[in-house]
Picture 1 (cartoon, helix red, strand yellow):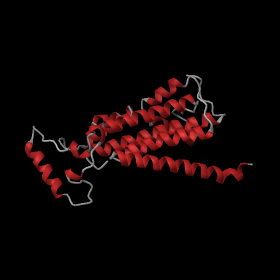
Picture 2 (cartoon, chains in turn brown, orange; picture 1 turned 180 degrees about the vertical axis):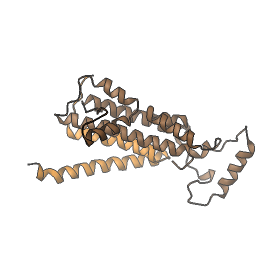
Picture 3 (tube, one colour; picture 1 turned 30 degrees about the horizontal axis):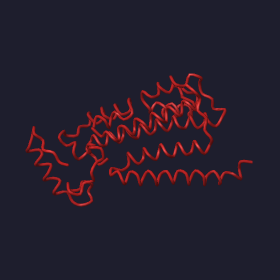
Picture 4 (spheres, helix red, strand yellow; picture 1 turned 90 degrees about the vertical axis):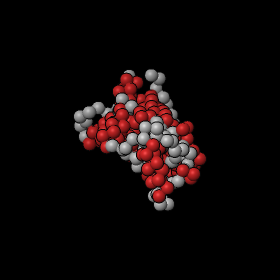
Amino acid sequence: MFEENPANPDASEAVRESRAEEPAGTGVAPDSEMPAASEGEATPENLDNESPSAARAVAVALSGWLLPGLGHALLKMWGRALAIFLTVGFLVYLGAGMRGNVFEPGGEDAFARLGYIADAGTGSFYLLARALEVSGPDVSHADGDYGTRFLATAGVLNLLAALHAYEAARGRKA
Amino acid sequence: MVPLHFSHFQSLLLFALIISLAFGTLGRRKPIERVKYAAWSFAMFLLVGIALGWFMYPFSR
């Protein structure tokens, strides 16, 4: 689980010692009890070759917002990156296919403005939704209404994932 | 793009499945815990969705 940092063996030793001193229940278990991250994923604990910086974490979060899953991919959390990319992408595809409403900026009422914020949460996939929905929205049927919710959920889910990537980049338990 | 058509229940199933998988992946780290959490979340989505549907049924007419 723990890999020696060839560039700075002292830092690796310090990290190893700090882990051994970690009291139970504080979030970081000893190596022997660490759950194996799936698919060789990096975890906040093995990202400690680099000190967590706020600017880097913000860049990771912004990347995750722009392209769903990219934030986690930058942190080498491949499984989560793929899951987020597929989930948000599939929701956008379904939402646009069901002719949900893709809200535009400058909406007339609070509902339209909130809807735009939620839709814009998908980042670049917002443009994909606009491109896919060539026939325009049709919310006169239940399909279109559900599609609107699918698109909004995709955006909110991506914002949640970007926040998750931010927390992981800061070295917090995520 | 070909328009997609789903029934209410199919939409509920799709939504519950996709969101549960995302919650499981984001919320847990061990694979077995992810599966358990996703299954629990999926079941709760269905249960609460159907229960709310029946709760609102008397007011729909």
